[in-house]
Length: 201
Image (cartoon, rainbow, N blue to C red; front, side, top):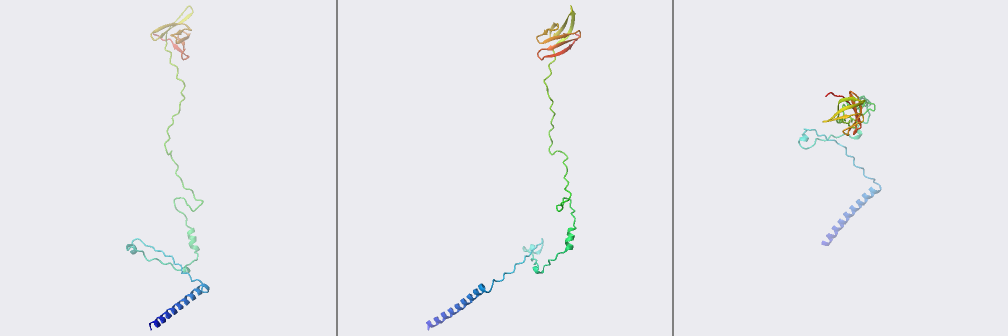
């Protein structure tokens, strides 16, 4: 008795499995050969959520309900020339350069009123020549003309010299010309000739 019940149960299970297998084979055969591909799921429409400061959603930590756009087939694709003409008629009224115009006036750049950094004052260079020769340290204080020879009385420091034309005084000064009121003397070290006037002692 027990073996008969077990055989019947096995037969029922096999029958159910056979039905399931036949249905699965039929479904796959239909989808591969004649059923075509299943229709794609409709694209999810884009929604925009806006949360204003101070709203109930922002206070509660959540967002406000998103605004749902109408389907694409209900949108109006018609152009409105009157609105476009109004936008084109707008004129730029800013204070800077109009970046949307090729013929607009360039911006005015303030001219620099002075150098950015002060320039150092350059002093003109003066050409410096050789230093002038020192003055002749002689004092012409007397004159004498005796027998056609002119003599000059000269004082060099505390020394007194009597010289005629051509004499060298103190190995340094040569008497070139003697006149009653002046005398010409050449400094042999500097090759410099000076005129000394007669001085009254």
